[in-house]
Image (tube, rainbow, N blue to C red; front, side):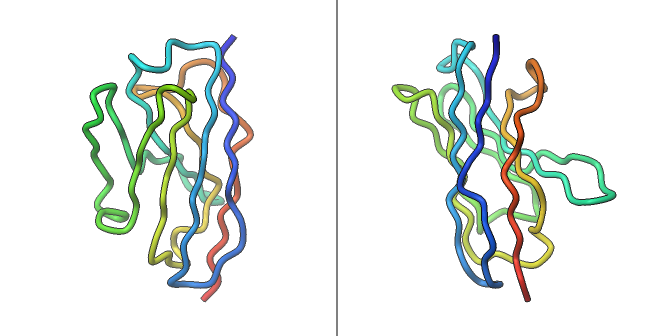
Length: 115
């Protein structure tokens, strides 16, 4: 059974930083492309960062240059370093495979950026 547990969210002022973590179980993590998605109230869930099994990365234009996705296959964990946060980054952040979702979505982690 796939389980994805996100953590690391919180309340931060604009310009601040947060590092999100996602621990995965129930999948062969090392062979999967993983992504961070986010969903703001009233909006569709969007994919903001992807990392392939080989470590290649890709980002949505809205976060390019500010967010960095990384992975530790030994720990079955994917990370999202978020710098220069903006109020429009306020969302619930989820991780999952890409393409996704694989199994159910996790509970996500709330990121709130105050202006």
